[in-house]
Image (cartoon, rainbow, N blue to C red; front, side, top):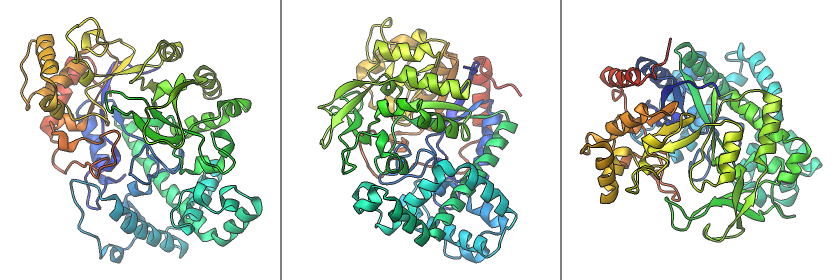
Length: 504
């Protein structure tokens, strides 16, 4: 892997500030890249960028390939003439600190409808050839996604496996009729996807010009209600009615006593093997159009995954089922060449997971919030002194409490272990920065810190609480003015002192 000693910041684009209720790929995103460069950071880590559904989790997307329309910069569309000043006459009063996804669903889709209507009337004709080229290049996933999205709207938003059987089962004549009847809707979906990818490409190219690369996620599983599962049912563990036989999750762990019942469909690996794991190759290829480095969420599932019989109320009664990770990664890397991959190897890590990771030289992950749960400094693999060089160290992740919140809520034994290990006695105001220093000073080749920790924010500003669907999950945003030059300089000094400074 080509990552050298460096550092970065974790921030999902929805958390960017801006006037329209959610972070966008516009002015604030470019300003964030500028701030990263000023702070000497090499990487901007984001979560999956796909369109989200119920629960608003970026890890439960309607497509493994599509982009999230909520992220499209409306001001950039105005600059192209695709939106007019009058289109902004009734902008709602948005919460500056939290995303209201329900309001985004209604209002932003109305704005994108207007942009498409303007385009259909001949506005921005210079985009027509670009759109045609994009639609042709991405047809392998875009055609199915557009049809899935258009049909879903006619079915009241129901998941595809609750549609009438002819649509659910993709009967050719019925799909042909739907394509004809919904032809404008298909064009609208393609147009919106084109806008997302066009804006993301411009932002990523700008980041590259500033020496900043993007780390992005591939969740191991796709959502049950996704165009991927609908378009390729033969590759998933479904019965004849397209209902799951078993679903994915994780057993009881640090985050939940009953495990996490994700509900994602599981793969028929034997079917995928017959065409050399083509779908996975295409998925990685699609992700490389978005990201410079790919973090594989729940990497251990490529060694063995937790299979939960369907239906179930919790993830307790499952079993580990082997998966052909070696064969799949070999096929993908043979087809695509070198790919920079980070293995999210947290949770139940067994020797087969470690072997899979190490055989392909993928760096694993360490989370410092997990490092102080015991008093034996020789045992805990996440203690800074026990980290490996080929590893990515985080103070916390999107699933963790903020570091300030962690310190406030930690067991006294954990706080005591930290004090003994570091010979320090931090306060609520100093702990997050101390933990950041420990991460940066470790031997791990890459150190990543969530923006909340750099801003020393409390538990109320965490991104997600695993195993819940509360209104706080995935909604956090920072405000204009919080990323100061002084904070950039402070981070740059630490980055320089620890040999991680990005080179121009």
